[in-house]
Length: 436
Ligand SMILES: NC(=O)c1ccc[n+]([C@@H]2O[C@H](COP(=O)([O-])OP(=O)(O)OC[C@H]3O[C@@H](n4cnc5c(N)ncnc54)[C@H](O)[C@@H]3O)[C@@H](O)[C@H]2O)c1
Image: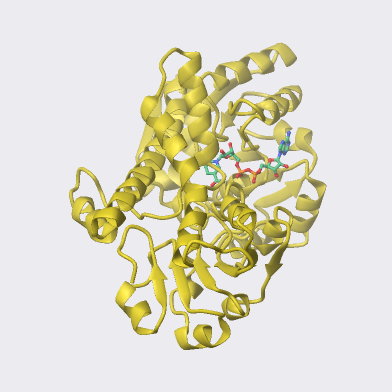
């Protein structure tokens, strides 16, 4: 099948490369000329493990191309995916659909022969109807069907997630479109990834319900962590104790600094808007958003508390800036409000991240960016683990102690056993466990 992927970001590039790997002919389109030029030179515009090899292999095989020219790619396509961004709209938190609608108009003008137009971007319920209307108005003669096919991949494990999904959701009642979708995903279907066919609106809402549920699970365990700290219980053991119950499940029960990233914050907000607009307010999700927001600055107070309540004039070193490991994505990373709050309290901030520093530099001021964990810890009164990159899991405590102003470790990801850190002579503060 011929595929045009409109939007070559985290989702578009990974999906495009994976579809090419399944044997389809894929053209990835983006209006960002620098991004396309980099891809044509074989350079990845994002950090995602395994992506460079996958892209290189499929470009070499002639199945994957990059362009800024949308019309020729759409003209020959059996399936056109819309994978552009849907950020929060400034001011009201609604999903900003400008890019989706603009792409729909451009696609409409180029359609030739029966084509399935698929929204892969996360879009509020009813957006598929609007895309269908835009295409009809722009090109009344077009023969097309609009399908919702939300994406569930996680950055950092995106290729694996795309190739081994828990499920594939396809929202369409058009039999021709369903056939095309089945063909596109046939390699996965053969591997028995469940293909879930629903109405389009249901598919759109499944994506938001899934993200809101996961955000709720994280926020729930974070609140339990706060309580555990107060009453002398251990949240790690609580998470294990409840996670072994199959009805609950062990995943997304890691207490930490609050969720961030390119999806949960904007998707929970957009879902709240949809709820309000339809007079079906989602009180649980409202609480989740509020609790998570408050948590970001609370983490700065936690750092201050580990330093006796005052960070003014002290140096605080942060390990990890991205919202999770194995990505360079800094969108809505918990490190950002944490740094602002620490700076507001008068701290000097040093930071190191294995992949995220380039993006972080554009978003942060007055931060000293360092070359590794030990350089970062230099003269620091507290070392704070914000993102659990593998390389922070086996730090040399003696080396850290020798370079730091005082041995204080604040571990916002609970990656160390408290006794081990205490034995190394550090004051150790983690999340939902007693201070050592
Ligand atoms: N990042 C994730 O982990 C993830 C996971 C699941 C779903 N999603 C959803 O997928 C969508 C895309 O997310 P992303 O993180 O890949 O975004 P992104 O910002 O990384 O990429 C979007 C790309 O679309 C391009 N673009 C915008 N308008 C265009 C147009 N008219 N023509 C061509 N290119 C255009 C931009 O230049 C950009 O490169 C969002 O709706 C997001 O919510 C993201």
